[in-house]
Image 1 (cartoon, rainbow, N blue to C red):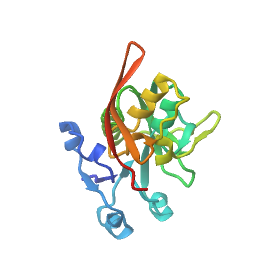
Image 2: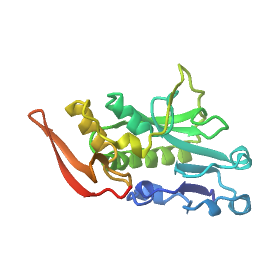
Image 3: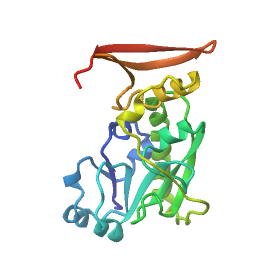
Length: 225
C-alpha cells in the first residue's frame, strides 16, 4: 500500500470535512514539529509529504529525500513569501490560484504540479475554507495521477509577511480599504484589525459595506501595552 503524509499545523485544513475519495487514500496525518523526523518517515516511506500549512522550517534532508509538496495561494512567481492572501487583498486582487508546488531550498520557488482558482471574497475564515477544498482536490489529483511539476516562469514579485502592527486601521484609508483590512484578519486565529484610542483599543470584525458606509462588530478594552 502506498503511504502519504499530510503535515498540517493549523486547524483550517485539519478540521475541514474531507470527502470519501480523500479518506480512501492511506494518509498519515501529523501536526507537530517533533513528528516530522527521518526515523518516522523511513518507517512509512511516503510517496508524497503534503504541507497545507506548516509553522516550522523543514530540514533539507527531508525534502531532498522525499517529494514534499507545499501549497501557496498566489499566481506564482508573483507573490512568493509571507501573508499571501492578505497581500493579494491589499492589492485589490479578487481571485487567485492555489498552487501545489514542490518544496525546494527556494521559498515558494519550486516547480508547480497544478493549481485551482479560488475567490478572495469574504473573511479570512471563509477564504481558508475555500482554500481547504482546493488543497484537498489537489492532494487527491496528485496522488492519483503522479503529476510531474513544471518550473515557474515570469517575473518574481516577493511578498513580506505582515505583522500585528499592519492590522492597525489608519484614518487615511478609504471605506473599501478599511473593509478589506478588517476582513482579511477576521477569523482563523488571526488578531483582529484595531484602532488605538487613548487608553483603549478598539477591535473590529464581521464587517460589511452598505450605501458606502462601513458597519462592523466592535470590541473595546483597556490597552495594557
